[in-house]
Image 1 (cartoon, rainbow, N blue to C red):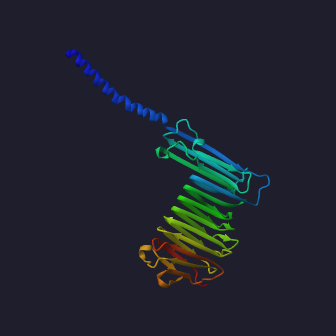
Image 2 (cartoon, rainbow, N blue to C red):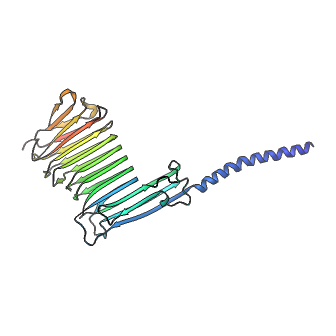
Length: 332
């Protein structure tokens, strides 16, 4: 009887030990079976035997990094969009990119429309994903003038390294992420707008020429904004600009080396400027606005042939300004 008891006791302990090993192993195996990976590369093009002088392009995405570049090479397209998707994590086993994204390319309409959207009510828990990378490379033919409207909810928009390109209206918007824009020696025939609600914005304009009076519009709720302007030739038109931040920082770097270029900057809702804000101005007169509403800085040669005229705002003194302004030569 005692032997049977010992045997039973041993069997029960063995069952307990095996259950400790087997049950977690089965859970791990089940999770492993659910783990999946999606790698997909897609290419979309727009071509025309009779290329238009100008074309409107809309790029609307829920996620992703949008890189927009111009090409001067001989190519068989006016627009080429390469999409690279990498996703890894739970709930993806047996699924394709079509279970996650709805991608639409309308290239027979005007404007051209590219949309990449997350499928509503998809059976994928994004919090369990190990990786999600979506890269959208947009190549535009440089001899076509494009009106560009690009926006993403979560991601980055890069429209950078623009050299000697003719541009029209540029509208870039990011809900959460960054915008990077810079152009050098370009001809601009429209307005430039950048809106970031939660993230950073960089706008660089180096010695560009304008065919009409244009406007720079920058909006940022939280984050860092850099406005970097350098001009050594007459611009051909006047630029007005507005920039707003609620609780972030707006940094302005301005430099002109021409007596034909002047500038005026008004910094609203900020009455204290000191070394902690790296505040520098050379070739500018400064005036404090009534009722401690802000600071006005005007170059000695303003107004002149062409001018930059900016209004910058914070919300109830919550944001901050940094600036470094230089205007040369004052006289010839």
